[in-house]
Image (cartoon, rainbow, N blue to C red):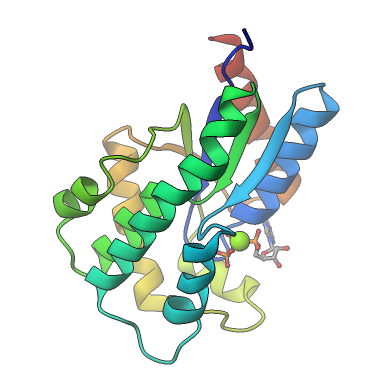
Length: 199
Ligand SMILES: Nc1ncnc2c1ncn2[C@@H]1O[C@H](COP(=O)(O)OP(=O)(O)OP(=O)(O)O)[C@@H](O)[C@H]1O
Ligand SMILES: [Mg+2]
């Protein structure tokens, strides 16, 4: 029987470096002989594509409840169609955003965090959830253009607060993202290798 893989997710506010780090992590793990895959939320499936179009690329935000429910549906689809099969075949799955993004973004938009947890109760818990922290002033400088409707300064600040609360609750492990990307990558790799040794 194949040994089950490991599920890692990377979280953070917009332009904190999630995609950069997720891709580096996959590359670093592969170069050490591990079978690792990159995946992202919203997913590449039909619900994920719908979210990109209907939620992220429009002028006004849809109600936060609609966002939360759509992301929860996409997550079920993402886990069933991509994450779970990869874990069953022994792969390391690195997801660029996961359930904590729903808690942070829709929580920051005023929804009850416990309700968001409930609608995501079917979501597979990750083995390691990393939060890449960077201040809104820093990430706004990194953004060349405003990519989505979520990215205002005040919103970033509120989203960061919810993430930091989850760090204090030890649901997320903090990595300082306000450093050169290569340093952040070393830090994340060390954490993941440690986690891999413990299984
Ligand atoms: N540690 C870093 N220091 C400076 N710039 C960085 C760092 N990490 C990433 N960047 C740059 O910041 C920008 C955003 O990075 P990236 O796309 O990885 O962020 P993200 O968290 O995935 O953003 P989004 O939420 O929009 O998907 C890119 O131009 C990237 O090259
Ligand atoms: Mg990204």
